Image (cartoon, rainbow, N blue to C red):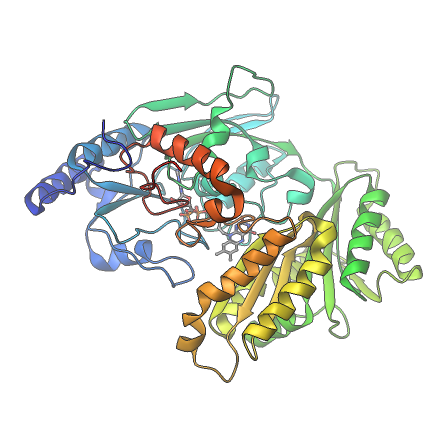
Length: 490
Ligand SMILES: Cc1cc2nc3c(=O)[nH]c(=O)nc-3n(C[C@H](O)[C@H](O)[C@H](O)COP(=O)(O)OP(=O)(O)OC[C@H]3O[C@@H](n4cnc5c(N)ncnc54)[C@H](O)[C@@H]3O)c2cc1C
């Protein structure tokens, strides 16, 4: 068997043409495209900064078709890029450009296989949109808590492959915490059927956790059993101005204390970020009379109908106001108004990009270290890049900050982007120095393939590489992503 991709020769043109014909027949006329105009949106990442190429886009309709695709690609020496909604912010979902890579998009595998409201589980195809799963859960009187601004486009397979986080992590955990079972097509063409709906299962290694967060490098996820939760009966949302980041953290602690741990979201929104939101999304409205340096969006929720979260948030914010932890607040008077608060938060990332070329650091540090991290990292960036605009926002409640650096107004975009590695390194080095992660929720993708070795050391790197070599010895699955699979063990 070939190891590390060695001995896995790329196909000759005639062989490639033959392989493409066999693959097209396998998925039928609705399951493929070779039209460059149709392939292009699948070969460019969401940020537009990573662009690959592929001779063929496949959209299988069943797990059996995925099995056949893997077998054919293996036989002809073709690489595979598993793809969901292509909303990756790390360049993980598009071809690397170094090989002949076939894009396998799971959009047609979009069926709910089963819902069990006694076991509180939903079993789905991996190509289901996240928003559809939320809606199916709601129709069954249940709640699926994964919540991302991209939920209308991303697929659950992509969420699983990236271990997506989002804004409800503080209460419900990451995707990893929401899964009971998986079905995966391995690089050798076998199906691993781990579609179990068990809350207790100690039969050896937890294989599903290996595939969650593996970013398509170990196999193609085709199905999942997800946990469902009771629907919240009462939700309250507020936007508060805080006098400092330290006050925001004390407000978080107070909120946890006063709700018995029922804070669902705690999101940081800076003045300069909101200015860009109102500039580029004029329909968004600020709920406070004016902008402050730091705002937080807070959400409390409870399944207990007897406890009004509106009253609870009002009481908590009154206490916070009296002790100087907030200087202003607006509590949403309706679900509709709550949604308009969220629209502001969810526009922050796109507003940065509309403003200009942006380098986005997706880092996490222990929550208590956030003020010092932001201070130190912002000074380092300001010293390195004259006029850089720093927009730090995001999931304060779980320590995940999106640290954006927008090009200086006076500089050329080309010069700014030429320094992107240097800027990313400053952000990542700071996160590491403060005990953090350089890939908090978006994954490593194509952008950070050296990060495990650099920041986690040779032991962790070798463990990961050994797993990759063992499960995908020909480096067929999403080459050039997560780590450099062609490296030998150290
Ligand atoms: C506006 C916006 C907001 C976002 N907010 C958040 C956020 O709050 N939190 C967060 O975590 N992310 C966020 N993201 C990033 C992105 O939406 C998530 O990473 C999401 O989980 C990706 O899902 P996808 O279906 O688009 O996957 P893709 O982008 O298609 O793929 C992502 C990775 O998963 C692999 N993959 C996809 N499907 C499969 C499969 N079936 N089997 C194996 N591997 C597969 C791909 O190869 C790739 O490596 C945001 C993105 C945007 C554009």
